[in-house]
Image 1: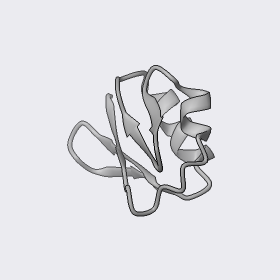
Image 2: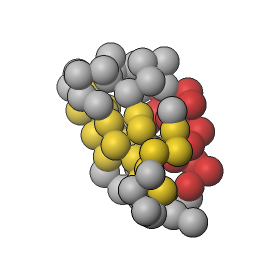
Image 3: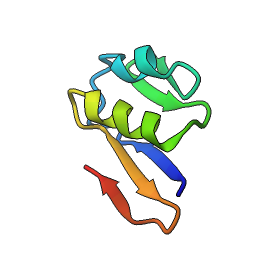
Image 4: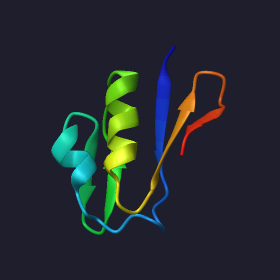
Length: 68
């Protein structure tokens, strides 16, 4: 199963934990993280879990939210 990440720009506090964990997927661009690539589902889920602002939502390939 593949996953897609989305970032809530209003919730993102630019901690950068997602970029530290997965720089090939996330980029801290000023005051908000952006998605610049793709990666394995387990890495997307882990990046969402380490986000202190809970700004990353992970959806499955059917569009259903799997995290948070």
